[in-house]
Image 1 (tube, one colour):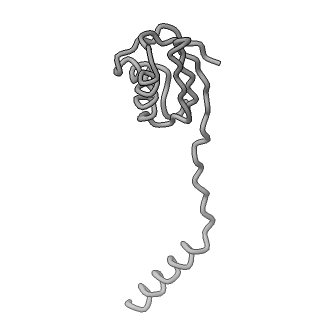
Image 2 (image 1 turned 180 degrees about the horizontal axis):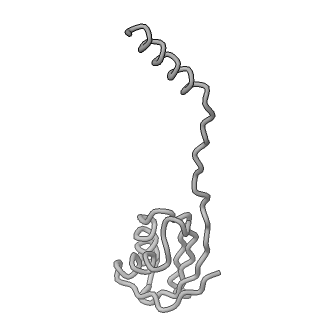
Length: 103
C-alpha cells in the first residue's frame, strides 16, 4: 500500500513538471493624453502642487502644468486611472478643472 502511494505521488510530481503552463498575460498599458483647462494657478508653485497631487495616482506617465495658459497635460494609463480621478486630484489641491480636451 505504501509502495502504491509512493508511485502515485511520484507519477503526479512528474506529470506536474512536464505539463505545459500557460504564460501569465500582463495588461498592456493604454496610454492616453489629455489637455485640461485648470483655473486658479498663479505661479510655478501651483504647477508643482498639481503635478505632485496627480503623480500620486497609479498609472500616471507624465504631468505638466502651466500657470501662464492655465493648462495641464497628462499622459496616463487608462487601465489604471481616469480623467475623473485626475480632475479630483487637481481639485483636491484647490484648483478647478473647467474643461477637458482629450487628445
